Amino acid sequence: MVRAVPTPSPVIRGDERAIKQALLNLLANAVKFTPIGGNVHVNVYRNAKGGIVGRQVQLVIEDSTSDKTDVAVQKARKLIQSDKVDFLIGNVNSSHAIAIAQVAAELKVLHIVPGGHADAVTGTSCHWTTFRICNTGAMQGNAMAGPLINKIGKKYYVIAQDYAFGHSLQEGFDPDYAADSVGYVLRSQVLKQLIADGVRRYDFLGGADESKMRWGAELKNYLNLHFARPFSRGSVYLALKNKGTEMKDWLRSRLPAGVWKGLKGAVGKKH
Image (cartoon, rainbow, N blue to C red):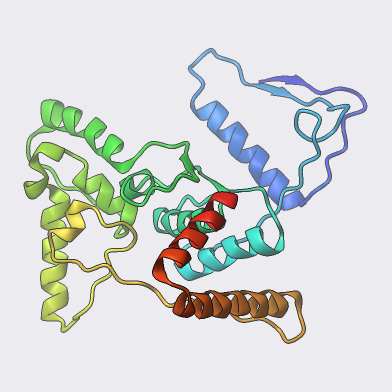
Protein backbone atom coordinates (compact mmCIF):
# COMPACT_ATOMS: atom_id res chain seq x y z
CA MET A 1 0.00 0.00 0.00
CA VAL A 2 1.39 3.38 -1.05
CA ARG A 3 0.42 6.37 1.12
CA ALA A 4 0.72 10.07 0.34
CA VAL A 5 -0.48 12.12 3.30
CA PRO A 6 0.69 15.74 3.73
CA THR A 7 1.91 17.16 7.06
CA PRO A 8 -0.06 18.51 8.78
CA SER A 9 -2.88 16.34 7.44
CA PRO A 10 -6.15 18.05 6.39
CA VAL A 11 -8.98 18.16 8.94
CA ILE A 12 -12.06 16.16 7.95
CA ARG A 13 -15.32 17.10 9.64
CA GLY A 14 -18.29 14.75 9.67
CA ASP A 15 -19.78 11.62 11.21
CA GLU A 16 -16.81 9.59 12.43
CA ARG A 17 -18.55 6.24 11.99
CA ALA A 18 -19.79 7.03 8.46
CA ILE A 19 -16.40 8.37 7.32
CA LYS A 20 -14.60 5.31 8.73
CA GLN A 21 -17.06 2.96 7.06
CA ALA A 22 -16.72 4.71 3.69
CA LEU A 23 -12.90 4.62 3.80
CA LEU A 24 -12.84 0.95 4.84
CA ASN A 25 -15.22 0.04 2.00
CA LEU A 26 -13.06 1.88 -0.54
CA LEU A 27 -9.86 0.24 0.70
CA ALA A 28 -11.43 -3.23 0.89
CA ASN A 29 -12.61 -3.01 -2.72
CA ALA A 30 -9.27 -1.61 -3.86
CA VAL A 31 -7.40 -4.53 -2.25
CA LYS A 32 -9.92 -7.09 -3.51
CA PHE A 33 -9.71 -6.03 -7.17
CA THR A 34 -5.97 -5.26 -7.31
CA PRO A 35 -3.98 -8.07 -9.00
CA ILE A 36 -1.12 -9.80 -7.20
CA GLY A 37 1.95 -7.57 -7.22
CA GLY A 38 -0.11 -4.41 -7.74
CA ASN A 39 -0.26 -1.37 -5.49
CA VAL A 40 -3.10 0.43 -3.72
CA HIS A 41 -2.51 4.19 -3.46
CA VAL A 42 -4.02 6.24 -0.65
CA ASN A 43 -3.76 9.97 -1.27
CA VAL A 44 -4.97 12.75 1.01
CA TYR A 45 -4.86 16.36 -0.15
CA ARG A 46 -6.38 19.67 0.72
CA ASN A 47 -8.70 21.38 -1.76
CA ALA A 48 -7.75 25.01 -1.29
CA LYS A 49 -11.03 26.24 -2.77
CA GLY A 50 -13.13 23.80 -0.75
CA GLY A 51 -16.00 21.59 -1.86
CA ILE A 52 -15.89 19.82 -5.24
CA VAL A 53 -14.20 21.61 -8.15
CA GLY A 54 -14.20 24.74 -6.03
CA ARG A 55 -17.91 24.56 -5.19
CA GLN A 56 -19.20 24.01 -1.68
CA VAL A 57 -21.24 20.80 -1.35
CA GLN A 58 -23.54 19.77 1.48
CA LEU A 59 -24.23 16.05 1.86
CA VAL A 60 -27.67 15.23 3.32
CA ILE A 61 -28.26 11.59 4.36
CA GLU A 62 -31.52 9.81 5.14
CA ASP A 63 -32.01 6.14 6.05
CA SER A 64 -34.59 4.61 3.71
CA THR A 65 -34.53 1.24 5.58
CA SER A 66 -34.10 -2.03 3.71
CA ASP A 67 -37.63 -3.39 3.52
CA LYS A 68 -40.18 -0.56 3.50
CA THR A 69 -40.67 1.11 0.12
CA ASP A 70 -43.11 3.66 1.57
CA VAL A 71 -40.39 4.90 3.93
CA ALA A 72 -38.00 5.34 0.98
CA VAL A 73 -40.65 7.41 -0.82
CA GLN A 74 -41.23 9.58 2.27
CA LYS A 75 -37.50 10.19 2.71
CA ALA A 76 -37.11 11.07 -0.98
CA ARG A 77 -39.90 13.65 -0.74
CA LYS A 78 -38.37 15.10 2.43
CA LEU A 79 -34.95 15.47 0.81
CA ILE A 80 -36.41 17.23 -2.21
CA GLN A 81 -39.20 19.32 -0.70
CA SER A 82 -37.83 20.14 2.77
CA ASP A 83 -34.04 19.85 2.44
CA LYS A 84 -34.09 21.29 -1.11
CA VAL A 85 -31.42 18.93 -2.48
CA ASP A 86 -30.36 19.33 -6.11
CA PHE A 87 -30.26 15.60 -6.85
CA LEU A 88 -30.72 12.18 -5.22
CA ILE A 89 -28.33 9.21 -5.09
CA GLY A 90 -29.86 5.84 -4.18
CA ASN A 91 -31.16 3.26 -3.63
CA VAL A 92 -29.29 -0.04 -3.94
CA ASN A 93 -32.61 -1.82 -3.35
CA SER A 94 -34.30 -2.18 -6.76
CA SER A 95 -37.86 -1.79 -5.47
CA HIS A 96 -36.86 1.35 -3.57
CA ALA A 97 -34.99 2.72 -6.60
CA ILE A 98 -38.10 2.29 -8.78
CA ALA A 99 -40.30 4.03 -6.20
CA ILE A 100 -37.82 6.88 -5.63
CA ALA A 101 -37.51 7.34 -9.40
CA GLN A 102 -41.24 8.07 -9.58
CA VAL A 103 -40.90 10.77 -6.90
CA ALA A 104 -37.85 12.31 -8.58
CA ALA A 105 -39.65 12.43 -11.94
CA GLU A 106 -42.74 13.99 -10.37
CA LEU A 107 -40.68 16.70 -8.66
CA LYS A 108 -38.27 17.08 -11.62
CA VAL A 109 -35.05 16.22 -9.78
CA LEU A 110 -32.11 14.18 -11.11
CA HIS A 111 -32.03 10.67 -9.61
CA ILE A 112 -28.78 8.66 -9.78
CA VAL A 113 -29.21 4.92 -9.12
CA PRO A 114 -25.93 3.34 -7.91
CA GLY A 115 -27.08 -0.24 -7.29
CA GLY A 116 -30.70 -0.95 -8.26
CA HIS A 117 -30.10 -3.74 -10.80
CA ALA A 118 -33.70 -4.59 -11.76
CA ASP A 119 -34.29 -4.11 -15.49
CA ALA A 120 -37.36 -1.95 -14.87
CA VAL A 121 -35.27 0.88 -13.32
CA THR A 122 -34.15 2.00 -16.77
CA GLY A 123 -36.67 -0.10 -18.69
CA THR A 124 -40.42 -0.06 -18.33
CA SER A 125 -40.29 2.17 -15.23
CA CYS A 126 -37.59 4.53 -16.50
CA HIS A 127 -38.06 8.30 -16.28
CA TRP A 128 -36.19 11.14 -17.96
CA THR A 129 -34.74 12.07 -14.57
CA THR A 130 -33.29 8.58 -13.93
CA PHE A 131 -29.59 7.84 -14.51
CA ARG A 132 -28.24 4.40 -13.57
CA ILE A 133 -24.51 3.75 -13.10
CA CYS A 134 -24.70 -0.02 -12.44
CA ASN A 135 -25.52 -2.96 -14.70
CA THR A 136 -28.93 -4.64 -14.99
CA GLY A 137 -30.24 -8.00 -13.88
CA ALA A 138 -30.53 -9.11 -17.52
CA MET A 139 -26.85 -8.25 -18.09
CA GLN A 140 -25.79 -10.36 -15.12
CA GLY A 141 -28.09 -13.23 -16.07
CA ASN A 142 -26.90 -13.29 -19.70
CA ALA A 143 -23.26 -13.03 -18.59
CA MET A 144 -23.62 -16.11 -16.35
CA ALA A 145 -25.72 -18.24 -18.72
CA GLY A 146 -22.91 -18.97 -21.21
CA PRO A 147 -20.27 -20.20 -18.74
CA LEU A 148 -22.86 -22.23 -16.81
CA ILE A 149 -24.10 -24.06 -19.90
CA ASN A 150 -20.74 -24.44 -21.68
CA LYS A 151 -18.52 -25.35 -18.72
CA ILE A 152 -20.76 -26.77 -15.99
CA GLY A 153 -23.92 -28.28 -17.47
CA LYS A 154 -27.31 -27.58 -18.94
CA LYS A 155 -29.26 -28.28 -15.74
CA TYR A 156 -28.84 -25.81 -12.91
CA TYR A 157 -30.78 -24.08 -10.14
CA VAL A 158 -30.90 -20.39 -9.31
CA ILE A 159 -31.33 -18.97 -5.81
CA ALA A 160 -32.10 -15.25 -5.90
CA GLN A 161 -33.77 -12.56 -3.83
CA ASP A 162 -37.57 -12.61 -3.92
CA TYR A 163 -38.02 -9.04 -5.14
CA ALA A 164 -37.49 -6.95 -8.29
CA PHE A 165 -33.74 -7.58 -8.75
CA GLY A 166 -33.97 -11.33 -8.14
CA HIS A 167 -36.84 -11.68 -10.60
CA SER A 168 -34.96 -9.71 -13.28
CA LEU A 169 -31.84 -11.81 -12.73
CA GLN A 170 -33.74 -15.07 -13.18
CA GLU A 171 -35.66 -13.85 -16.22
CA GLY A 172 -32.50 -12.51 -17.85
CA PHE A 173 -30.70 -15.79 -18.46
CA ASP A 174 -31.96 -16.10 -22.01
CA PRO A 175 -34.54 -13.65 -23.43
CA ASP A 176 -35.12 -15.97 -26.43
CA TYR A 177 -36.59 -18.55 -24.08
CA ALA A 178 -38.38 -16.26 -21.68
CA ALA A 179 -41.46 -18.52 -21.57
CA ASP A 180 -39.31 -21.35 -20.22
CA SER A 181 -36.99 -19.25 -18.06
CA VAL A 182 -36.17 -20.23 -14.51
CA GLY A 183 -37.79 -17.01 -13.31
CA TYR A 184 -41.05 -17.84 -15.05
CA VAL A 185 -41.13 -21.37 -13.65
CA LEU A 186 -40.22 -20.19 -10.16
CA ARG A 187 -42.89 -17.49 -10.15
CA SER A 188 -45.50 -19.97 -11.37
CA GLN A 189 -44.70 -22.23 -8.42
CA VAL A 190 -44.85 -19.27 -6.01
CA LEU A 191 -48.25 -18.19 -7.34
CA LYS A 192 -49.51 -21.78 -7.23
CA GLN A 193 -48.56 -22.05 -3.56
CA LEU A 194 -50.04 -18.64 -2.71
CA ILE A 195 -53.35 -19.59 -4.34
CA ALA A 196 -53.38 -22.86 -2.38
CA ASP A 197 -52.78 -20.83 0.81
CA GLY A 198 -55.79 -18.63 0.06
CA VAL A 199 -53.91 -15.50 -1.03
CA ARG A 200 -55.97 -13.50 -3.52
CA ARG A 201 -53.70 -10.53 -4.24
CA TYR A 202 -50.06 -10.56 -5.37
CA ASP A 203 -47.95 -7.43 -5.90
CA PHE A 204 -45.50 -7.64 -8.84
CA LEU A 205 -43.88 -4.38 -7.62
CA GLY A 206 -42.91 -1.47 -9.88
CA GLY A 207 -43.03 -1.61 -13.65
CA ALA A 208 -45.43 -3.12 -16.17
CA ASP A 209 -43.13 -5.21 -18.35
CA GLU A 210 -44.36 -8.15 -20.41
CA SER A 211 -43.14 -10.76 -17.92
CA LYS A 212 -45.68 -9.43 -15.39
CA MET A 213 -48.56 -8.66 -17.72
CA ARG A 214 -48.59 -12.23 -19.09
CA TRP A 215 -49.98 -13.30 -15.71
CA GLY A 216 -52.99 -11.05 -16.19
CA ALA A 217 -51.59 -8.36 -13.87
CA GLU A 218 -53.54 -5.10 -13.58
CA LEU A 219 -52.09 -1.64 -13.02
CA LYS A 220 -53.10 -0.23 -9.64
CA ASN A 221 -52.42 3.09 -7.95
CA TYR A 222 -51.32 3.52 -4.36
CA LEU A 223 -53.02 6.01 -2.04
CA ASN A 224 -50.56 8.62 -0.77
CA LEU A 225 -51.32 10.11 2.65
CA HIS A 226 -49.58 13.34 3.71
CA PHE A 227 -49.36 14.51 7.31
CA ALA A 228 -47.82 17.58 8.93
CA ARG A 229 -47.74 19.17 12.36
CA PRO A 230 -50.19 22.07 12.85
CA PHE A 231 -48.75 25.51 12.04
CA SER A 232 -45.54 23.99 10.63
CA ARG A 233 -44.01 24.70 7.22
CA GLY A 234 -45.26 21.29 6.13
CA SER A 235 -48.85 22.16 7.05
CA VAL A 236 -48.58 25.43 5.11
CA TYR A 237 -47.22 23.55 2.08
CA LEU A 238 -50.05 20.97 2.20
CA ALA A 239 -52.68 23.70 2.61
CA LEU A 240 -51.36 25.60 -0.42
CA LYS A 241 -51.13 22.40 -2.44
CA ASN A 242 -54.73 21.48 -1.59
CA LYS A 243 -55.93 24.99 -2.49
CA GLY A 244 -54.11 24.73 -5.81
CA THR A 245 -55.78 21.40 -6.54
CA GLU A 246 -59.19 22.80 -5.61
CA MET A 247 -58.61 25.82 -7.89
CA LYS A 248 -57.65 23.57 -10.81
CA ASP A 249 -60.76 21.44 -10.29
CA TRP A 250 -62.92 24.58 -10.13
CA LEU A 251 -61.46 25.96 -13.37
CA ARG A 252 -61.70 22.59 -15.12
CA SER A 253 -65.40 22.31 -14.26
CA ARG A 254 -66.27 25.82 -15.52
CA LEU A 255 -64.02 26.47 -18.53
CA PRO A 256 -64.74 25.04 -22.00
CA ALA A 257 -62.66 21.94 -22.75
CA GLY A 258 -60.66 23.75 -25.47
CA VAL A 259 -59.82 26.70 -23.23
CA TRP A 260 -58.78 24.44 -20.35
CA LYS A 261 -56.55 22.37 -22.65
CA GLY A 262 -54.89 25.50 -24.03
CA LEU A 263 -54.37 26.95 -20.53
CA LYS A 264 -52.88 23.70 -19.28
CA GLY A 265 -50.52 23.53 -22.25
CA ALA A 266 -49.38 27.13 -21.73
CA VAL A 267 -48.60 26.48 -18.06
CA GLY A 268 -46.70 23.32 -18.95
CA LYS A 269 -44.55 25.18 -21.50
CA LYS A 270 -43.84 27.93 -18.98
CA HIS A 271 -42.34 25.41 -16.56
